[in-house]
Image (cartoon, rainbow, N blue to C red):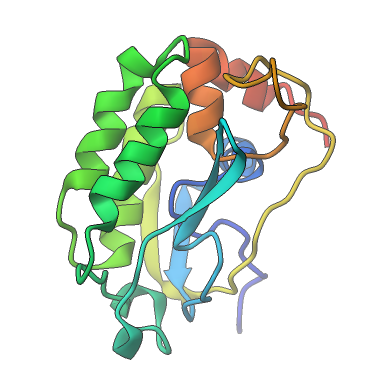
Length: 194
C-alpha cells in the first residue's frame, strides 16, 4: 500500500517556506525518490540584490535531467560556481551576519559536487547547522515521493540589506534570512503562523 503524499523534498538551498515546513514536520526524513523537475527549487533559489530579486540556478547536464532526481548530474561546462558566489557576496557582504555564515555557504558552492542531490544535501546540512535545527534529518531514497514547492504568503517583515531602496521581498532563500537575522533565524521560522 502506497503511503501518503510527501511534502519534504530536498530543495537546492530552500526558501523560508521550505525551512518553516522542515522545522514543523514530525518526520525526520527528506524524501528524494521522485523525478527531477526542471526550473524548480530542486536546482534554483532566489536572493535579494541591489537590482531586486535574482534567481540563481545550478546547471544540470541535459542527458540526466529527464529521470530520477538522484541521478541528475551537475554541469561544469561554464564557471557558474564563481558567478553564483559573487552574486551572493555582492548581495550580502554588508548584511549583519554574512561574516559568520558566508564562508560556510561559499565552501559548499565552490566544492565540485558530482550530483545535484549531493550538493543539495550538503547545503541542507550546513544551513541546518547554522540555524540550529533540532532535527537530525536523514535521506529516504526508497519511499516514493512527489515533488512539491512550498510557498507561504504574508511572512513577517524583517530587515533586508536593500530595504532602503526596495520594498520587503517575501519568501526568499533561507540565506537571506540567515545573513540578515543570524541566530534569530530559527525563532523567525518557528514564529510563522500558517
